[in-house]
Amino acid sequence: MIPEGRTNNLQPNRLVLEAAHRLAVDRFGSLAGYRLSLRPSRRFLFAEPPTVQNLAVELRKPAFAALIAQGDPDARVHLVIETDNVSPGIRALYRAAKVPYVHLRVLPAMADLYYETDGISIEYKTAPDHLDYAVHSILEHAESSFNPARTGSLLRNTLQKTLHSALTSLTEEMDYSVHLQMPFGYAVGYRPDMPGAIARQTIEMVIGRNPMTTEAAEVVLPIRVESRPIEERDEETRAMDEQVAAFVVRSGIPMVAVEPATREGSYSVTCSMDGVDEAVIEESDIQGWSRYFEGVLSELRDHLTFGNGQGSGNEG
Image (cartoon, rainbow, N blue to C red):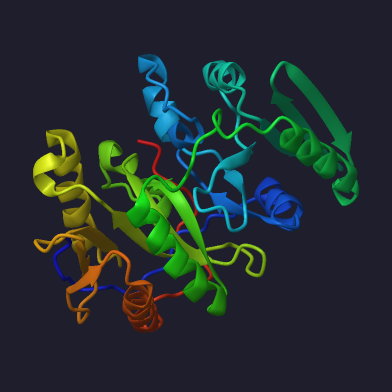
């Protein structure tokens, strides 16, 4: 549960910051039948989250994007897009799990795309204006080798799938997008007083401005979605949830939390924004979810300032 607090005149975090980000969005985000989920935590890109201890922090940090098929109820990952340098350890995990990934860099007068999966690697170097062949070749190969048993699903349970369905219909009308499984530090941006542990805490859904129609794809609303009753969560998860809730209230950040209510099959929905009442919504009530979030997003319009917000995530 998130206590009600005061929402400051917020400048949201920007998800698209540099030339490589914009190029990835423009080229891969425009592929027919697909969409991008920005900044997914790497551990969710695998069918089974890896448990390599010395890579635990890197796995909780995000790739730039995951390419998923529109309308896929599981939001399975078809291609991972990286724009930052990727460590040999993470590359080895992608390779071992046969998760297809492309590392995109923008060089002087040139774009470089390194693609790898299932024992095959291909590198394309071309002018940024002539990337279509490379992008479609990469997609064609990724699709020919796609195996849903290998890659992760960004929607992990029935509650997430139902809520995502409701939010997708609503946000498309408002020219927003829904991103999945994003680290908290990337959902709210760099803040010097944010502990590293909560910066890496996963936020299941993040509503942001449409990256295809806006310059920076700013975050509008993080949403924590928890299907387990509090007594079934481990001590670390409970502690992280409490710290995240305290931080958003202290910092005046708008955020919504969804968690089981006392009535079976229903969920308590709380918001950190002043004036937004707690609601109890049945899991299957898509119209109820849409009404609630339409009200929250309408209320947010008075508090959001776009243009010069935070520009990076807390690394922790």
